[in-house]
Image (cartoon, rainbow, N blue to C red; front, side, top):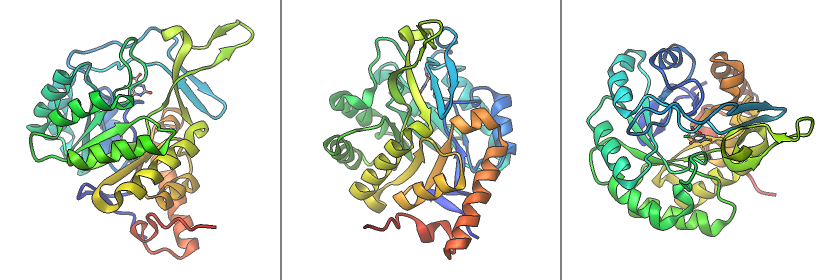
Length: 308
Ligand code: HRO
């Protein structure tokens, strides 16, 4: 079974890779991803300066996923540029993820990664956990400012990591900007931002930062993620590539994202819980489904959602 696929013309050896977020901020963690079944090495979203992130507790597993308010703990973008050549021997795509705190930050980081050994640049427009910094992609004027600087320089494909949208007009508006600025791929979706989980015993939120408001991930958000993948697939078709992310923990989940139109799926919450064995497990489960259904490759099933 051929599970090779591409994002922005770049070959991915299989369908499942890690999502920016869990266990991808240090060089040791990135080496673990290099040695794992992940089809790429996706790095933690970085900022200009290193950050230790928000106060703890800032991550909690839930029955069907997780809530977190990590607050962008990372080593600063220079470190990730230096790590890239050390990771090339794994022979899989290296993806930088940048999260500016200003338009100028995005410009500086994208210019630096354009000159580095990374293969793709994911521009994170959707971190929900920085106090006083709204998610960029919910503000289309601000988004256009960022896209105008990140799309300007270099030859490496640039994509955007989007928050969940809950109305088609927002997906349409974003799709127009993606076309206008020749963005090569989208990553749908980031965590569902600013949800609240309460501990009834303690009568407190379960997270400390932002008075308990944090990003929701895992199975809770899978239908929202599928809807966003499908909406962008409908709107942009083969003009862009799509990373699907949100609640994938089994081969069935990955297959649903494939039908919706995702070129590759990223896993975050299940990787945090299960460790690097999850990549090979989910890939194998997906292959079994494709074989049972008579598909010959991932490409064969992509976008093939049927209608009632
Ligand atoms: O670090 C975080 O708190 C974080 C980031 Cl950058 C992001 O993009 N999405 C998220 O749920 N958490």
